[in-house]
Amino acid sequence: MVSDPQLLILASLAEGDKHGYAIIQDVQRFAGIRLGAGTLYGAITRLEALGWIRGLESEDRRKPYRLTAPGRRSLEEQLHALDSVVKTALRRLRPA
Amino acid sequence: MTLDPRLGKLYPRSWRERYGPEFDALLEEVQPAWREFTDVLEGAIKMRNLSGTTWLKLTTAMAVAGAIVAAGISFAVPRRYVSWAELRVIPQKSAPDSRDYLAGLSVEVFSRRSLANVIQRLGLYQSERARRPFSEIVSQMRQRDLQIQDEPDGALRISFAYPDPYKSQAVVRALITTFMEANQTRRTAAERCRSQSPALHGVGNRSGNALGPPDRLWPPSCEVGLRNRHVGCRRLRDGRRHVISDFRSLHLNGDHGAHPTSQPATLACRRARRNPA
Image (tube, rainbow over all chains, first blue to last red; front, side, top):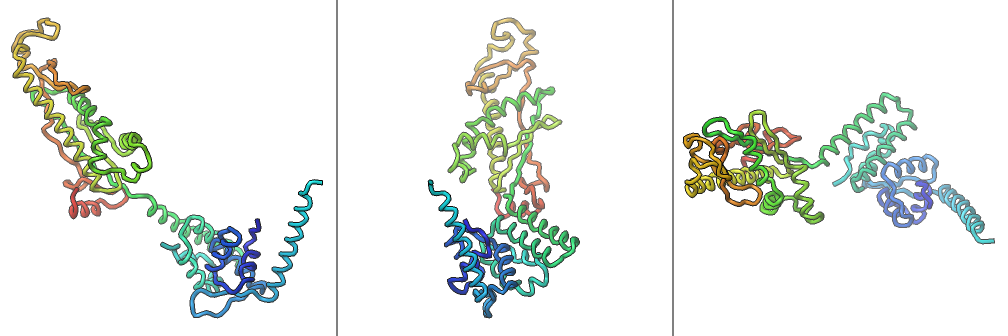
C-alpha cells in the first residue's frame, strides 16, 4: 500500500484543485488512508517548498492547492518507478 | 465537536503566518479524535525541529500540549457523585452488641434481591443493562459503587457513587428506608412474639433447661429470623432490645446528600436544592 503522504497528495491534486479537507476525503476514498491534519500540512509545506504544488488565492480561509508542472512531472516519475517495482515484484512472484 | 483550534498555536510562528488560518479552518472540520490530536502534536514537533526552535521553546510547547491533554482527560472521565448516610443503633437499656445487630440487618438489606429491587425501581445502569446480564450489574453495584463501612463508634456508613447525583441520593435513601423497615419488622415481630409467648417468662431455653430467676429473664426478646424471613422467637441472652432510632445523613454542608468527587461541593448542593431526589 502506498502510504507516502506527498505522493498521495500529488495524486489527489492530479484530478483538480482541492483544499486540505477535500484532499483528506479524496485520499481516504481512493487509497483507504486517513491523513491526519498534522501529516497533511507537513507534506503540503514540503511540496510547496519544492514547488510541486502552489496555493491559490481564496476568499475563504480554506486555501485550495494546485499541482504545478514540476509537480506533475515528479508525480509521473514516481508512479513510473512504482510501476516498475510492482511489475518486477509480480513477475518474481509468478511460479517458474 | 471539533479539535481545539488552539492546537495550531503549537506550530512555529513563521509557519503559522503562512498556513495558520487554513490550518485552523481544517482543525475545525476534522473529527476530534486522539489519533488526530497526536498527529497534530507530532506535526508541530517536526515543524519546530525544521525551523530550528530551541529546546526551551519545544519544552514549553510540550507543557502546553500536556495541559491540553490533561484538560481533555478530565472532561472525558465521567463525573461521579457520592451520597452517604450513617446508621446508628441506640441501645435501649445496657450497651447492646450493636455491630452484630447491624450486621444481621445488613445481610437482608444488601442482599442481591434487595439491590436488584433498588436498581429496577430507580432505573439505574440503564445503558449497561442493555449490554450485560442483570446479575453482573448487581455484582458491579455491590463491588464497585456501594460501600459499607463500620465506623469506630459502632455506626454503619453506607455510601453510593453514581453519575447522577439525584439517583445517588435516592439509592442511599432507599437503602436506609429498607434498613428502617427491616428493623421495624423485627420490632413488630418481637412484640408479637412477646405477647404470644408468655410461657417464655421464666421458663428457660428451647431445651427446657432453667436459665435463672424470672426477674432476670423478663421481658424475653424476640426477633425475626434473617435468612428465611421466618418470624420466630429467640430469647436474647441479656434481654436487651436493639432499636435503630436515630439515623442521619452526614453531608458536607449538613443537609444535602451528594457531592461530586471532582468538583466543589457547593455546586452539587446547589443542584440538589433545585431538584431534590
